[in-house]
Structures are given as C-alpha cells and as structure tokens.
Length: 332
Image (tube, rainbow, N blue to C red; front, side, top):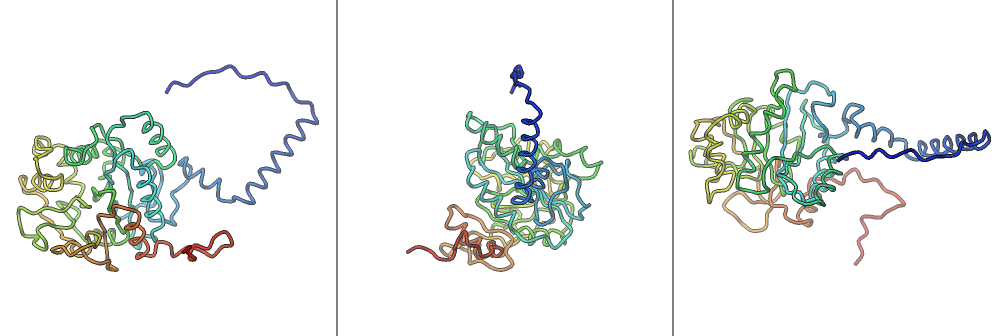
C-alpha cells in the first residue's frame, strides 16, 4: 500500500511555561504507565522482534530466522491448515498453545497457520492485522481447498522458504501438517519425536487400525509428521508434482501414495492410542476417552469439545483468585 506523504501541519510554538508543563505531564503519564503496566514495554519489544522469545512458554509465533534463540537439539514445525475466515479458531489455538507447560526437552516448536490466497478486502485487512500482531501466518499461492493440492503446496513450498536461512543446516528436523480442529500436546510430541529417526520418518495415527505393516495404509490427516528430507523430496520430485490429487481420496491418502510409489517413509510410527478422535460414540479403534499420555485429539468441531479437552489437560491451572472475577460460580 502506497504511503501518503502529507504536509506537516503548522503548529504554533509553545512558550517556555507551556513546554515545561507538557514535559512534566508526559513524565507523569510514563511513570503511571510503568507502575500499572510494567510488562507492556517488554511485550511491545517482543512483538517487534527486539528481544529473545520468552522461555516461559513452549512455542513462539515469530519468524524463527529473525529471532536469536538457544541452539535446540530438536526443531519442529507445525503447519495448521486452516482458512482465512477462521479468525476465532486461530485465536483459540494461539491461547491453547501459549498456555501449555514448558517443554521438558531441548526443542523448538514453531506453529504457523497455513492459508491459501486471500479473496476479500475483509480478509486482507484482518489477516494483515494478525500478521502484524502474531507473525504466525503463511499464505500459499493457491486457491483455498482441503483435498485439491493444498497439502502439496504447503510441503513443497517449505524448502524454498527456509533453505539458505539456517547456514546450510535443515530448517527443521520434522514438519507436521495438522487440521485446525486438532489439539496437539507439544511436550508429548517433542519427547516422542526426540527418540525417533531424523530421516525417512512418517509418523501419525495409522489406518487401517493398528496394522502398520499394511503397505496401502496411511496416516490420518488430523496431524502427521514427516522428516525434513521427505519434505525436500516432495519439493523436487515429479511423483507428488504430477499427482497432487487422486480423486476421490483425501490429502492424507494421496500423500501416503507418494511415499509408497517412491519406497519412502519406511520409518513409520503409529501413535495409536496416543493420537485419536474426540470420543462421541464407539469406533473401531481411533476414538476413545482422554488419556494422560495423549499427543493429539482430533475432531474438536465446536467450543464445547474444545472446553472439555482443555479442561481435562488442565490448561486453566494457572488461574489465580482475584476480586475481578469468580469464574467457578456459574449462574443457574
């Protein structure tokens, strides 16, 4: 957007007494602001990229290249595939991930919300505000879709975005594709991947159920991980480029077919029962009650399901008593 260059307004110069009064007022305002909001300047500095990411939380939503950070032994990128208009879901996910406990392994997890091209003026403005505030949006060169090539565009774009920005080292050890109705417990994910191979890895919830040896199986689209070498292969190979879609199959089945045709993804890991669908009714094996060792819960389609999930995993445990609210006394 072109910047407008407007003439400066003519302002009469103040006399000495007026100037002194103005300076005194500004100093008093700054003192009150610092006393009431002592962390606000730190927050603004963080948003501007002027300091290291806070280590009180497991994730950061800023550019991993632009911010200095301790050298992690494990680097994970989670791409949450969503649509531009899902503003409320993105805000909920940001809160849910920000409030998770610290990682217990030396890992860095970056979370990005992956969209296709914007189509309305409203999206252009509101998504731009999200980018300015959070820095966690990726906009791909594609039309918004679920099973018509968005997954291919996502994975194939990453090497071009990150290669050359990390001194020749892979930008990440693992890359996840996740749905926006999936809740991932970051420490459980990091600890699990930390003990797995860094090459030729394909990990998730495998279908057919508990039959990882089935060549024709696949990891469900709720959330699955690929090692970085497989992401690079997707970017350069003719196999996925020529088979971005295979109607009527979903993107998760299509991706599995790429790996199968190239004899890749041999380090396959089925995370059943630690990855599962939200329990509503009995299913063959991929839907059950919450368990403490959960990595991911899928099909959180409404606020009630999100609330029950986050409550089970104690996301509000840090809430302190206050005279400003009584959140535990519900109105009848």
